[in-house]
Image (cartoon, rainbow, N blue to C red):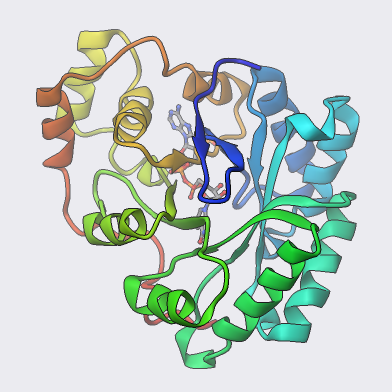
Length: 275
Ligand code: NDP
């Protein structure tokens, strides 16, 4: 292992704080990207049924020779598969496509509130968790208004809420709600898909530490606590995104990055997305 910090989830399961994402990577390219990530030292991989690359992810895992218990694998339930029985079937399909016999984390990908099925889906995740087929269960893109019904009706508190989070969209309210309920926040698009890397503030901080703008942004996240999931298909960037443990941002630098907030959402709004 590479000294990657871990977060202890609310059920005692340890999750690496730096996760490797494969959104928008075609299946045939995913095996090489995940292999490069594992080679660089990542042990946590974030995929989803809708990404269409669970097979490529699974191939890289199988070929890596790394013991399964040393890996942390996340996948997600797609919106069209919500519902109790549908969720159980979708989980089986993800596991089969990945070639695994358990997951470390399974998330409801979006609340899709107009479908009004996420409580049933959550009940299925509780079943999968109770049956030992997944070590931790959680949600993604849930606002407090979507989490509260799960907290009220469920028997398991979500371990993770994976949300869009970067300097241009900091979602402090959602993060505070998560923290107040023992739910770990995981930041997707931590680099804002590149949108904040050219900011003068970020470039100046990068120059001061002799690191890259991407490393500044990832370090900004890390010092505040969320789990992060940088994605890259380029081996040099894959390594660079993990190389963020050897420097520290000052309070003033953290504040300067905070000032980049501009409600700059790159993805859909969770209250409105049902597709
Ligand atoms: P990121 O914020 O991770 O940005 C990825 C982009 O930044 C790519 O274009 C990549 O290009 C580029 N990049 C990566 N590293 C560097 C670097 N060091 N310097 C310069 N550019 C860099 O965006 P994603 O949207 O991919 O989000 C990351 C992960 O979050 C996803 O892969 C997925 O796992 C998860 N996610 C979850 C969602 C959800 O709804 N739950 C939604 C979206 C993402 P290149 O590959 O060419 O290096």
